Each structure stands twice: as C-alpha cells, then as structure tokens.
Length: 286
Image (cartoon, rainbow, N blue to C red; front, side):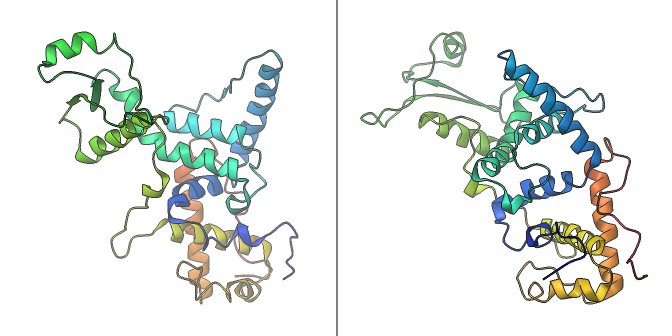
C-alpha cells in the first residue's frame, strides 16, 4: 500500500507481533525514536564514543546535565551502541541489538537494587560451608574465598545463604534466580527472558499494547491525508488480538493525544518539543 510518506513501514505502526517479553523494551525504544532531543544526544555520544575507541577507550559518555537517574543514563547508553537506532523499528532490529536491549530491561531492576542496597543486599551466598558455620564466621570469611560455579561432574553445591527479609518476596526470588545463573556459570544479571512477562492490568487500564497502538495511530495520522486513508491500514489489524482498532475519528484522535502524553512522561525531562510525528489534526481537516 502506498502512503504519502515512503519511509513508513508496517513495523512503524503494527505492534501485534511484539512478543510478551519484549513489550517493555519495544515501548521505550519506539517512544525514544520520536524524540529529536534523544536523537541529538545519541548522535553526539556516538561521535565521542568513536573518538574514545580510537585511543583505546571503549566508553560511552553522555554529557547532558538533565540525565540524573540510572535508568536514563543506562538506557541512552544502550541506544548509543545500537546499530539500528533511530531509523530501524523495533521489529526490524538485528537479533544482537534486540538481545542487548532485552537483557538491559530484564536485568535493570537488579542493577538498580545493587546501587541502592550494595551495603544491605537482599540475598548473599557463601559456598562450601559446613553445617557448623555460624553467621559471624560466615561474615568474616565470605570475602576471602571467591565463588566457583558447578562443574559438569559436580552438580551439587553446598553453602550458606543470608536472606534480608526487609526486601519483598519478589525481590528475593529475582535475586535467587540471579544466583542460579551464577551457579551455572552464567552472568548474574542475565535474567531468564522467558520469565519476564508484562504485568496484567486491571480492567480499564491501558496496557503496553494500547500505548504502542496509540503511537502507531499518531504515526499514521502524520503520514495519511485523512482518517479514511488511515483506516485502510487498520483493515488487517482490527481482528488481531492486540491489533489497532479505531472505528471513529474521535477515538483515533484521542489515541494520538494519548501517545503525546506518554511521550512527555518518558522524555519530557529531556525534550520539551512534541514527538517528531505529532500533528494537530488531519491534513484534510479534523
């Protein structure tokens, strides 16, 4: 189907095929594509990154003073090294780029906890301790003996867990999964991505699919001259489980407004401009 703007692809507005465990990463990535300020920040950081690599430093520098949180810094750093950002839609990213983003979002809660609770860890383990070990003796020895993962011949590990019950069960379970990775010789922060399911929303609450569909609607309104033209793109989507389905002009326009609000919630701290594909209405009138 031809459009008024040749660069529009189905992956820019159709998010039906985004897997459950990729929704959060896709959501952040696609809304970041709408920010000129983010694009400018990434372009500047890539230039600095290239300069650093020439002198043997594999470092990413983000110089914007507005970056104040760990999430902001680390997510933008991943965009710097993504070969597809900002021109490639999430669904068309290379497997490597997608995997890097998925690992970041899967491990971020654990990374954030480490910075916040490094001296008050939810869960800690000391290996190969006898049954007579006390907490005091374990504390004195845990820094002296580095952990060695299980081998192919020895699959039984013995040790001592210290559990900090000030943390929630969810946190403790996530930390334990991290230790299981360590026991198997995998990176501690590499969460099993198939367990990262989106939270179920109560009735009436917008899901990540709703918010991605709102973004898709905003992009269609930008590229199409009229609502009737945009509706042609929705014919194959309306019967999909998470497809975009706006039968009325006013509901379509509300979805576009919703996308702008979500964009501002995500990137308003960095970008005071509206999304790149934001329009005030249809080219042939509202």
